[in-house]
Length: 392
Image 1 (cartoon, rainbow, N blue to C red):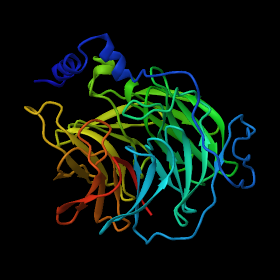
Image 2: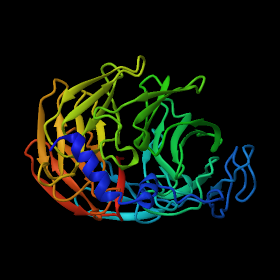
Image 3: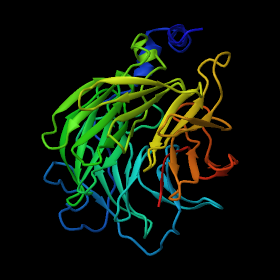
């Protein structure tokens, strides 16, 4: 069975009619903006809770008590709840902080603040005091606040290298999404840039000059000039685009290669799309896991880690796995038990943490901890359908 035939078969199975096509497009869109809660105090440059800011939004602020996570603690976004959870890699969960409905991606700043893309807005969490400091609503109308795989609101998220700007991809069910730019000092949205459909991932070049939104349902990456905020579409479709919204063969997550700034997008454990964001040219390198792939990250030395969620066709494909690929292209495959979504690596590069949340059915409430030297893997219960993960 070829990949072309697999895409067609999948469309028939998952999309028996027009209603199913609409469902895969994520078209549960309605009127109204994101919800926001009330708060107590207002830092400089932030409007009091419930008061419109300069951009027309309001910011929710809450006070912060004491506490500090141990080095190496993980923070995961609980897509199945409204929290982020702190996780000791040896013991499991050590506490959670409420951030907003269905948190997706998260990113950690050098100042210890975590930025979390929720369905309601971007939550700002002080990881030292373990408190939410603010909730910044989106400017984009993403419909009512909901949960589930196709919910509107924030998905991918990234910080500029200097920490002054935050970029978040906002999914608009049934249409193209937006990249919102947040001033991390004023805690407000300053600009909105149109991107493709369902921006699963957002990344920034090492020099901060470009931002990349990986758009799942439109088979592309939007390259945004950080200075002018001018967007440019680059199609990334090594299997083509036939099947449209019903196709499984779409981009999910991107890693920026440290050596040359090219974008690495794994597909199906078979093809690595290497995209030059300056020219838009894509080259394809072979991969070996033969499994549907989602999360991707790259270490400082250029080692790529890609999460395999499991087979599209059990008769043809392999099960869930973690691929570890050297800069030279050699791969080691670590089998995993059950679907997973995203991955982070310990500071010493010897351990991978793979979240079990998964955006589709089959998720579980925990992480797989993979010893990259020995291949030993253990499951660690923590969080509620955890998707994003960072190492503190």
